[in-house]
Length: 116
Length: 114
Image (cartoon, rainbow over all chains, first blue to last red; front, side, top):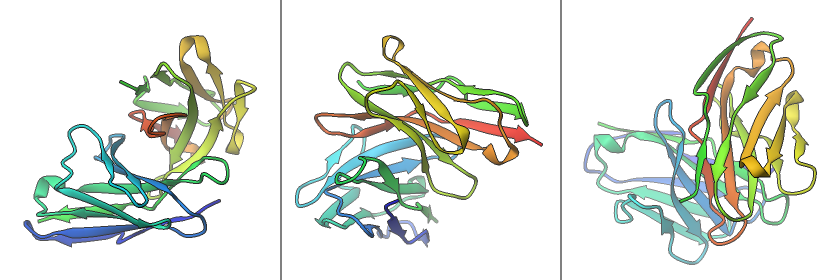
């Protein structure tokens, strides 16, 4: 199946700094990518829908100025957590839909962010 | 608002027992339905999906699910579980129009005892 790669897989940062997470579709073009946040022992919470060449669509309650999403190309979307705080510590997962194939959602490996 | 409910949060079974995990969704339009699995330390993988046609769909590793439109349900089943099925299972719904976003249920953590 299609491959979605996320980087970094783990990141530790100090409070107040910004962290960028990359999500790449390796063998297909993804006009739309989705960013999820997964809390321990909980489900995936959709944060935003990232559309190539346009602004992301954020879910209710998600601060767009804190979680900056950029989808500059058909294979790359980035999530930047700005001025991170300990409560932003979480597991962030990106996914992309394969429009050309089955419409299945493919997931990245996830990025565990720890803010000290 | 669109939502997905999974009724069983934790399930413990012995090997060879039968499994059924419930999933209900609320959405007025047409949806695609999925079950994803997350094995310990791994990322989410697709188990099976329903887009249209036969409401009984078969997936990988002996799993199947039945879409009952009148009940807004898409329950996952397996006749005989194995220890290797220990994982977390997520039901998901995808709108077929509008934002096309995917919404996940809260997940069911399955533990199979050897």
